Image 1 (cartoon, rainbow, N blue to C red):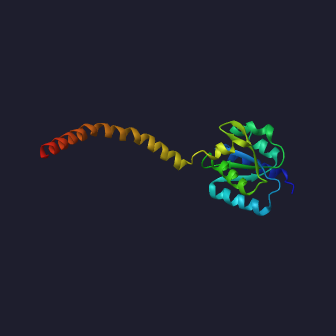
Image 2 (image 1 turned 90 degrees about the vertical axis):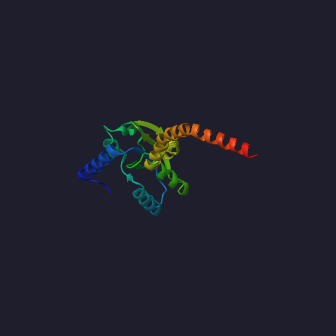
Image 3 (image 1 turned 45 degrees about the vertical axis):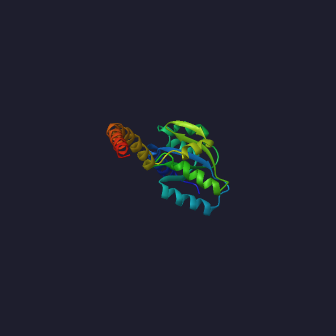
Length: 174
């Protein structure tokens, strides 16, 4: 179904807004997927905070101008599905990687993160990035570790004194 000029402008504006706020982008070839599979993929995308769109490459190229994703403009050929991570950088990578396990027709072609373009094989690296909660837990662990070590070091003289007193008491009792 062909889009008129106003509809095309709306699609470009929507994609430009999403691209301006997104953390990462995965473009994947989707030719051969059934309607049911695409519907399932869209449902999973909504649940994980990923904006998923099938759009003409020329419209996407115009939408990403002036964003970190402008580096992918020369690679936009063929039927592509675009997944923008909105909540955490690895969400789109995890979505595409997990769905590609069950749907072999879905093939990641491009990954873009932080103004850099990577081949589709880097979707595994993107998928391995921690979620926000995991990253915060790691940070708390790193912050708490020095305080724990300091508490152990400060308590050690008292513990050693207690051990010496206990050993002397056991020797006198024997």
